[in-house]
Length: 492
Image (cartoon, rainbow, N blue to C red; front, side, top):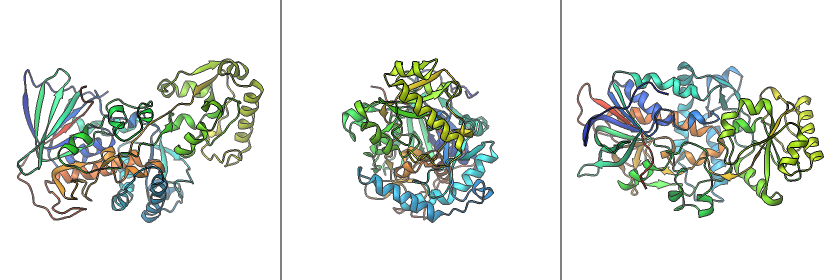
């Protein structure tokens, strides 16, 4: 938990002012706050939750970096154009099922800046343990696993305690404020006790409110109802606040239909688990492409499957197991577990023994499924009791968001920048379409959030669509303040 308390503005409506308002404090918001505050301006913050971090602190913590020091240390050569080609393949595959638009220039910008993000995170104390191989997505090892996702919060907490940063917690952004020419000049927020605050942004507002996966009613506009009502694993404040507010002032949303279903499970848990069907046998690469996992599960008898692992994993990943849509089942032996979940005991025992023998054998690729992501240390599933979790199809992330310029300024439907409005993280549409690569969601938030915060703090607006670089400095004053606003769910 953060140590800073929510600001008390007294009774009734209130007003505040700042140079920049950053909405949300997930990866993009944390990075935007840090980079804006580093420009020497003052910060005010608002967040729907009671702490910073958003979904990333609860995630597996996989981040992709291009040309990073971590790659160089292991003799791995990588470059921007290779990454762009990998991303393009993922977008082309997604375009077979969804309406997808990617911003190749934005993807290239992320790739160019991602190594600096790796350096910044490392300098702030974030540690990465290993590369996670995904050869069917990343042609080069570049997806790194963080030692502990809560390191992200600890890395950026000092920025929220700077004298030029103030924070509103448990506060919801309601709408953006514009002037007579359509320029965004602030935001109206509501605190948990119902008090309304209007915060004037003298330089700009950064939308970093996350996605809309926790809002089934909004998802129904872009998905069939049965998919929109599927379970979601993550914080419940990803309700599309920034998407709706930005759209209300003319922002151009893309990729809103790209809400890929997946089998709900943390990738960290998948590393240690095998998936079996009602016949007690494995049927898919448990750590393979998301869409392939879904297709393989739907093809099983009764569309049923279970993740199976031992007590070592159950104890280590207890927090992740508690978040699963359906409860876990445990038993003192594999035979007893088979009885609990209704699969043949001899088949389940044989499946686990074969998996353990493969891990002990040291081969890098599973001959049955092609799996290449192994448990840490290749530890086997051998310590009773054993646990099984039903496999459930739901949603974890969405790809819809705003088109932006190269300075992360939101574009309207005519391709022109909206004055004073910037976006990053899951409020972006042009990079999120590459999410099936793996690792680009969190690292994309940190990378482009950093650039968005810096751009907003500069007080310079783009004057032409698609990344125009000319701009005029907006009126400001020395010692001005940035407002950072944390968002949450709209009232029903």
